[in-house]
Image (cartoon, rainbow, N blue to C red; front, side, top):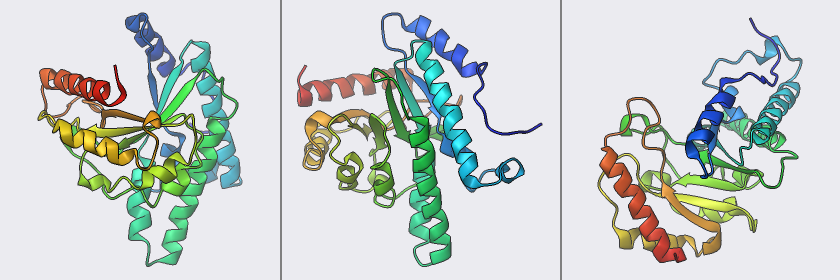
Length: 266
């Protein structure tokens, strides 16, 4: 069966959120969902022409379905939603690789522009007390990764996205330097950039002074008040998990809190 994209009020994610919310008690329960852009990346099956006369019509329905979905999460008293997105890391690689092929490069520029269109449509008109962030995901299966290179190629597009925060992976040299965070932040006073300077792939703790130095460097591009610290990704993106123990996971979180208390004050 197939058809046009539409909001599904019976999506199992809603029950998943209610379960987490109950378990969280007084704590804020965060819901994560995949980005709408995951449906049109060019290395996935693409059936939209079977149901739409134009790409623009497809994007409009996709953005509308996500917008209605996010608003239903809000009705369930979700106040923090994170949209996980591997598309930007994919586009970093493709925009770099296609520099010498104008036709191929234009294709990926179009995908990036389409991503801005559909994401901002999904975020349109949301309640002010709902925080929506995104994680620019680079792969995390069993402590491996999919994509490398810095954020420069996609920074102009990320700067246009109406998110409240961006989780950026910066746990190794594969993520490039910190300079692009200035453009991503784009002077937006209420936008937070969460730097994943602590890896979730391995148990060894980072050097505290080195992490603090990186945060100080980052504050030269973005005010410290708009910066945060986190693990680079989750500790288990799939059921196989990463190559670290539960104790090492807690040690990582304790380490992050210790650094944050020192940098931002308790």
